Amino acid sequence: MSSFQSNSENRRAKGKGDIIVVDNKTAFSSEAYDSDVRATIPNYCSFHDETIDLIKTINEVPDIWLDTGCGTGTFGVKVEKYFPSTKCIMADPSESMLSRAKDKLNSENNTYIISGTQDLSCQNDSIDVITSIQSHHYLDLEGRQKATRNCFRMLKAGGVYVTFENIRKNTDIGNIIGLERWKNFQVQNGKSICDAEKHIGRFNNDYFPITLESHIGVLVDAGFSVAEVLWVSAMQAGFYAVK
Ligand SMILES: C[S@@+](CC[C@H](N)C(=O)[O-])C[C@H]1O[C@@H](n2cnc3c(N)ncnc32)[C@H](O)[C@@H]1O
Image 1: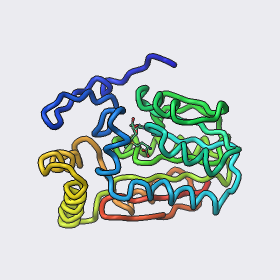
Image 2: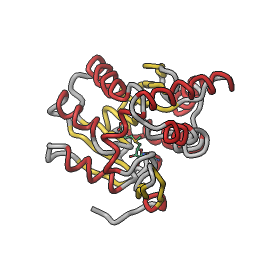
Image 3: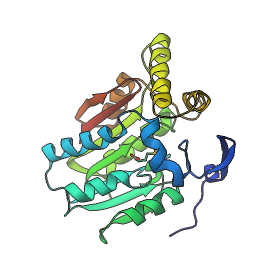
């Protein structure tokens, strides 16, 4: 595997008095990601389950599935389970996240690429399904547009793109209410108020959410003929689009 490391891989963050090496753009080290993510992102498992259910409905046997921003591969494990004959391409700009994914997945047919979505260079019209779950909100609008256009380019005609993201509400009050609910979820799931507030403070600072309407606009501008909301909660949403 290449020795690529982004600047963010060396970022350090304080948590509960310890120094944690944050080796990717999420709030956790790759080592802590799997145990912490469920207490941090409400309905995290639903993102994966809704996506599996959607793809089963549209294409029961995809040949090639790219999971970009795959993180530690938790979703890839589900793809392998429900689509055993599908070849997975797992991509992530963080080498430490990707190597965990490689350890978790079973199939020897899978490919692993260290790259952000916007820089992936898979062939035009070559992929049946592309998923990007909680991985594009670190990008600004221009970066998202570039990443989404790149997914459109790589998909076959009729191919499906699914993305889940943190979202921005339409009003400041809507954001305050949504973020308060998100903070409360984290406290109810064992985080200290201080840690939950620190995490909520990442909104607009470490990641850059856009509204539901802007998400649909990015998909339509990239060329997708179908662009729909799949699922919505307080501060996260899922979308799907068909080429
Ligand atoms: C919150 S994790 C989500 C991981 C996984 N999709 C899941 O469902 O658990 C976000 C991941 O996005 C990756 N990421 C950051 N910037 C990205 C980009 N420009 N393109 C693709 N992935 C990116 C991070 O390295 C990290 O592994």
